[in-house]
Length: 527
Image (cartoon, rainbow, N blue to C red; front, side):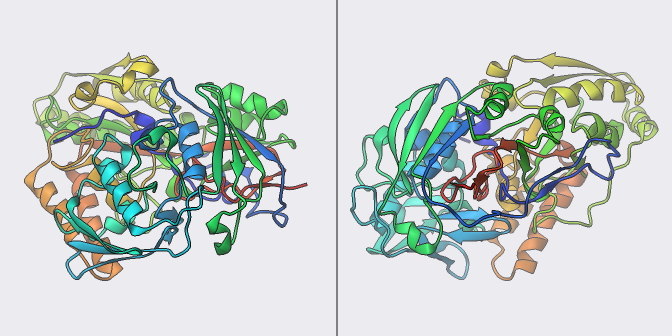
């Protein structure tokens, strides 16, 4: 199994939906008195051309303009989506093809035909062809990129170009969900590119200047091919600022330094909910993040299923929503991806039952359980939930201590991540069929819950080989979910909304599959 040494924020890419859409309300099950944070249903005025948008996002010490490492930080990711077009995007529950005009499988999903859109051009005017797409796929799959995990099923040698607008993609094994993988930030750059830090793109903007850890300035293309599909670019320029501290990003918007700030904390969102000079925006629920206590099935005491179930019953999920998510989140039912179209809504609610947890442990001969939960404050919710669990576990007779790791160190040791008995996890939303195989099973890119059983591997394989109507494919996804609900190592207890802050004049910012790294292609400044 191959693991790529890439940043956690890269691994668990954030997600969202229309920044101007949705409603962040206090969860009814949480019973919080937190105020509702609402947004408008869409742009309130017609798009206006011109102007410069100033937006702040989290950066990192490893910031780069390389297309191969474009997802390493939020600010890099947002910039990349402006420079390089992708084959497709996820918009709500639908896949919207961009550079690809169509993507179709053969009867057993072992080969996929991609038809490249006619008329797409790079920023130097050259026409984008199927050869460029295949070169990009091979390069992304063959290097330590985020996309490599999603493209691991591609057979790059057996894949070929049929004609300038058509390529035949061969897979190592059948995969009925490979179209979703092709819509996961597959950036396209010219065939033969060797300088990946200056790779040409076909996106709506070009990079004019960049300073690592500070800012970058992008200017709009006047010849952008995608304008014919409707939409931007409407802005003349976009200035992206790298600001590590979430509070500083928000304060920058309040002070007029920025127009938009990504990655705002829930505490700040609650404090600014009634500020007339700001809009607090979030994604719809299917694109919220999942909070989990992750148990490694290969480590004691979690080699015993009773220990897994005991931890699940020991968690007070309602209390987690009230305290950790400040009432803005919702209870989760030990499964990722709630509210997605693939999610199995028949999964029952897991009750808070500390007495049942005690009995399970006693029956398994684990009457005196002492656990250490590894966590950090890398992202809001992880440390808070670990601390809350210490108190909740006491009622179940479980002694828990918190092992707080510095945020900068928490995700750098892959070996530790994949062997720790108990740790916190915050899973950013992904299309559920991809997410399940990305984190679970013997072929998973990041199997945080440890070794997989032959049964789970068989269910995941069956999920990918299922081709046909959506009902059959959904049933295969549900089978995996039920197995993980009963025997998996993740206790997914709450869902937490990602939040951003913006000036009221900012319109048209869209998530297009990634809330924390939004698409600014159609953004504009209203009056």
